[in-house]
Image (cartoon, rainbow, N blue to C red; front, side, top):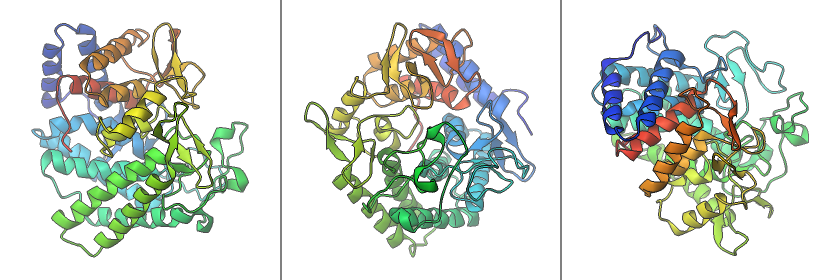
Length: 428
């Protein structure tokens, strides 16, 4: 089943936002377009109660994107049980996909062999792409937790959930020493960001306590493979799991394993991820390899370093985070761009001087400064190329040049920032 009209509860929130945006009519116009677009164009509810959510103009579901796409609807799910059912159905679908293959990042709606079936890795007809990314496992577990916090629902913590958690733990523990893993990924391509070096093993690394990632949330390969923001996300999610297994499932036999992994990853971050910027300040690196190599940068895709407070890893005012943030919003970050119409963080995934609305929204969501939020929202609506929707990336000197006409994740990140500006929060 697809949505053919906007549910009353969703329309009510859209009306509330419109009223609050009296002095910002463009915010309301874009909010309403984006908030409706995801429901009407990407959500398909199956007869078995599960939900499939398209990323947009690619006919597949990403575990990461689909979580972010429905996250703002959690505020509606409090009062609308049908919206809650839709989100719970997505959680069930995501977790079943993890149980099918915890190394895959994107899946088909049917076992139709669509996607990158020629990649040199363990593909099957359900998988669109098998780029292993830590965040692909974090996001569905986060959504299951946030659904509980927003609505009180606990039926998502079922056998599918328990099996998925054990699969996630096994992968993260295995990838603490990637040299013992059998995961490999090679794509026949001239785009080096789409394939791993060393015959699909990735570049050399040392054991650090952190868990290895093949690719970034951009789906571009890691250079040093201990992706720090994704390890931060894993720490937060492991805290969620401890709470769920202790307070809801009352099954504490798994808790020591969760605590051990969490402690090892956190210790690895503290030992290896703290580096010095050009000013001599201590900041978080984006990637490290445990051999002394690291990158000072940030990517626009979440989890990124800018997102650390949003993820729940630290506060917005934590000293190291603030130093990191200042560095990343400067030319010291090779993917930070400024131009005539916008400034912000871009990605290796898109052309030079293209900034991402996702990253701009995240910059707003991780500050308490209302003026910064207002500036970013004004910029986002002024650079939508007349579409009333967000895009993947756009040229800071010509917003009419953009990538991806239909990109639901970006639309919903814009919506979440508008909601945040008016103190409509997603419970954590």
